[in-house]
Image (tube, rainbow, N blue to C red; front, side, top):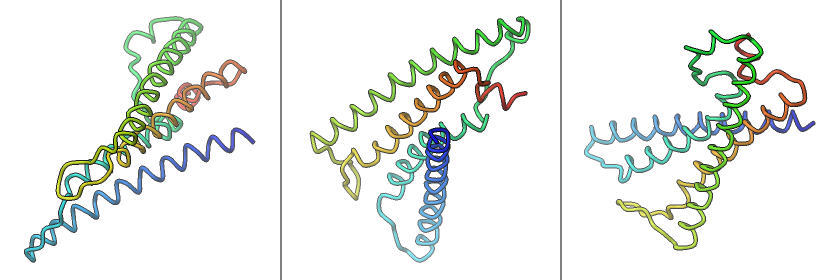
Length: 166
């Protein structure tokens, strides 16, 4: 039950990230075609940047769960199998702590932007918390994915990053 909910959470975040990339493409194409006819679409660069940040952060958990993150194993292959596993668990735990710290501060940044009513600069002024929110949500979902892997490995399951490698 919980496994299904978490897998759907990661998939939904991945789909939204994909939609953001499609929106970037549509906006840039609209701007290019608009220039042919002398039409300027305001703040295309701003919104493309917002969608890029959203897609990057929202795709983190999905990519992690599907083994898409790059792991550097230059020195770890020299270690015994048991030591490799312990080292990977340690690195996963440290990475979860760093990600949780970052997610907390991204959420706090969104809260501050909302409470101070910050507006973006550019032709179209929008509340800054709106483009920041997907970044914070993506970081939180990524943190959940890392904790999910830690908990499942403590319960005897192989972590995702090792399971997909084997």
